[in-house]
Image 1 (cartoon, each protein chain N blue to C red):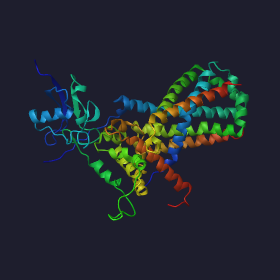
Image 2: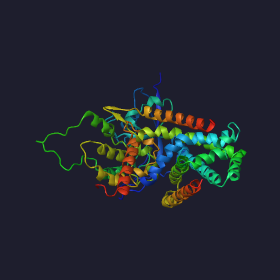
Image 3: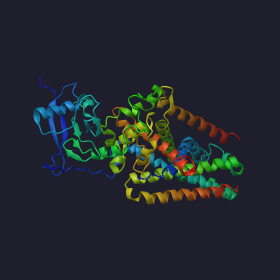
Image 4: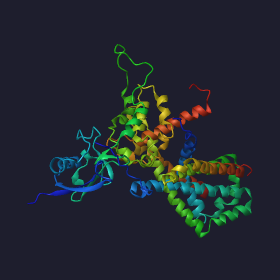
Length: 129
Length: 248
Length: 116
């Protein structure tokens, strides 16, 4: 009896074949916006060092409709990053107290709570003046 | 009253006759308590004795009956046909493995890699009978117990896109088994295992898709095990590179 | 099989991931939406306030952390996303490009913020 194992090819668009994989790919693409926003901050830092005129021009550029639209998109992806990152955190942080393993929901919940607290704190610090 | 029936569509492949796999549909009685494995057994017993598939315990402990059922990796003995009735049930071999025949896949890649992980207790000194058993507290046991539950069913490999894209990757079950031994208080072989686990084809081939843990029928959570190994490997790396004077 | 050097970038990826997960949404909301739309007055992040923050040594460290760590997170994940999308053969080359870009930007960030 002869063997002839058959290898099924993987499609180049494998990530479109299941919702689970598509969500994973969207999560990976959040990196474009997280990294992209860091570059925006970098440019802002550079303009800040160049003096008030350059910095004000930078702030003015952020008011263009295109800039606002891109930031709205970036916000959506940034929130997706946060949501998936905190959901994944418990897997890397197995907490055991005595003989009880801490439930992943509690670990994730603590991260989400921290996210809310930090966001409110940053917002408050910026707005209060 | 006519007997209820359900259609089972199976991917067939005869290496001696076929150039490619092809689907064949069978009509079997619809029995409410039947699992997919029961339907396949009925086909083999009553309709087509050439239908080839792995199975054994019929109770989700042996890990033999992994198939792709309606596109998802499942155990045939744990998937009830009533979930799909009256629709057709499509049964294919596990994804990401070469097809040997019908629903039987070639598992050699997994088996070969399994040995590399050194899935056994490694100690400098193994107790003699006179020295007695090793003491392990319940807390120490709970630390690694879930990773012992793996039944090598390979559903995780079937779910993992990284294994599908790159067969060099060691894959979820093997890496989780390495973690099972690394976190067992009786074991002293962590450093040895890290040579494989911390390699690029080890845990660093994983991008935490998480599909493996979702597919696992025994709640092993291989994805979690892999992330924990990544942290351990990172700690090791920091110590080696930033504090090379430390004890090796 | 040699142990990988990936921990070097993975630690930056993790740190950047945690920081960006916690603060990037609120920062985008403030600088990219609320201030440009006038919901918050632009003086909140105006030159005087921003400059005072960046002049402070702790402020400098915070700004550097906000720029550099999320950037390393982003490029690391982007590199692997490209590999997932089919560029498996270019994995090493993509590494040089992505981490090189992050390294250059990190230097630019330090150069920009230190003199303020």
